[in-house]
Length: 353
Ligand SMILES: *Cc1c(COP(=O)(O)O)cnc(C)c1O
View 1 (cartoon, rainbow, N blue to C red):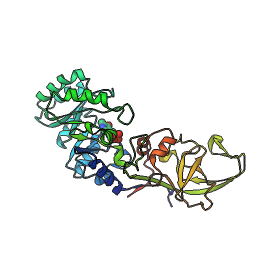
View 2 (cartoon, protein in one colour):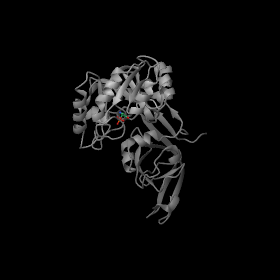
View 3 (cartoon, helix red, strand yellow):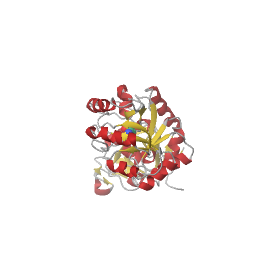
View 4 (cartoon, rainbow, N blue to C red):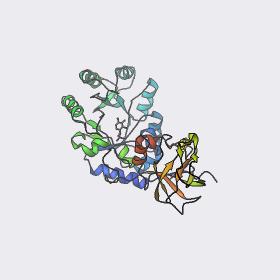
């Protein structure tokens, strides 16, 4: 028998979450499926999200795979092309390309075919990661409009604080001011903006995390938003230890029993993608009951306090996150965000639908 750890991908949950996005907007929906669809598997996720109007990702090989699987929607390369060879593929597979820097326009200049690309001109309105400075947008726009290789142009930006109190106001105003000069489609909203700021929606929204059933907000749960977890990471207890007061658990004896205790050893560790920094007390489900981790997470195992779970034993089912244990809750306990946990699922974990 292989180790009992598994990840269940619930395609109905993905479809449900897309529907929640659909209900929240009249704009076209571009599903963000970068990072192997946030760890859910590119084609597995795409199949469940097939009603999306477009897909956004980074790796051109994934984009080609998606096109070859028969998806006819817009497929956007979120960082555009990295080298001239990519342009050939992008044209051949009708991939839309972000243009965030002058070097990408220069690369385009050398491309021989006419009207080969839909491009998304990315404006830096305050994230300061990718995109043209507002003052440079008109020049870039003129270059692209006149460019022989360019077909359509969409204007896009990305928000830094859509999920927090600071919100989107400054960035949105800068974006709208710029966009007002052109009659082109606009796109700015990630999940947080899609759910909280309807005036950001424009022509295309770009939800990611919400589609996977996690909340973009610290103060509102996925459940409150009507979202269902798409990934459930589960395993089993493979051993029981009876501790005496004073006994330590795991590497560095990070946890020490202050009384006699019964703990379960779970077949899941950081080599599966469980966060090593999850502290004592990180919530976890055992036989559907809330329990807490104890001791340091090791490569292949972690430990759980079975104090209140009289019936838990070898073979008891453990849910690390997903159905019944929000990934947001585990992420917060471990000092990270759901995105990192979902993307961090490692390939040794068997996945099933
Ligand atoms: C990842 C990404 C999104 C989706 O963000 P979520 O917070 O997961 O909704 C949208 N736009 C861009 C440019 C992205 O890189």
